[in-house]
Length: 363
Image: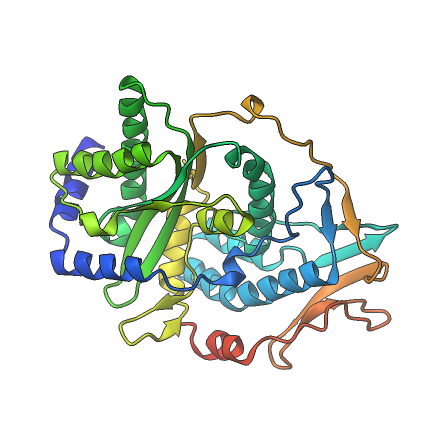
């Protein structure tokens, strides 16, 4: 409602200025990204054969991702049960059981996936498809720039409404540019991080924008638009820099909406289940779902790209059979196993540091 938006704007305008300065400093550091969350599932092939392929390497990545999320998903299901939210309890367990089985036959493979936006396995597939779809298009655009648009941190009660307000603001900027004769083309992706020291959330957009001029206007108009709402943004927290069009660049731009691992003031890495749970609820599913990724200013039909094949190919190093995912925390064993013969597919060994994080630092 209008009254709710006014209340939200007032709350945003009163956000701590010193904290915004700290946020800007952190953004400038650009720490290494979590490859567990960003690596595409099947690898990217932009040649004439774009069929999905399964190798031991890509399957190992998938096993790593599934074993990672299966550690923290029960915590989210428990939170949903505590608040008597049956929808999110069922949804959490659906993610937990995603890709529980794998069938390999006659050079092709099949896995039943949940296709939910918070699932790392399904988002691995979606990231792969986005890169394959948009890499050839972005390579035909000129002078790409990477733009980060932020707002002050908000409490959980205002998170979803803030994201909607951000989307409305982004759309109004595109309309303003169009009326001024600019052809703004690119893509935007939402990311939400949780601050464990303050128990609040930082929603922001990562955008790919064509031409330096338009990218800088996006930043300028973004700040102006929020100032009209009496929300004073840190200009240092908004960022604009040249952007490449390689797979690694797109993985940065197309990252998942919810940051899973957080770091506090003491640089301690943890998974805060409540923060992750609320972040997922605000950005995924439910009534009036949030659109986390969006292209603007162009359609795929305007560009010549190779047609994709739906074939799910398997390399010969993976034996045929029906496999079940075994998740054994006590034995630290996570792999696809033929329960009849005992054959496992990847021999995945979870890194010691990650094992400590998942067994001791989920709160």
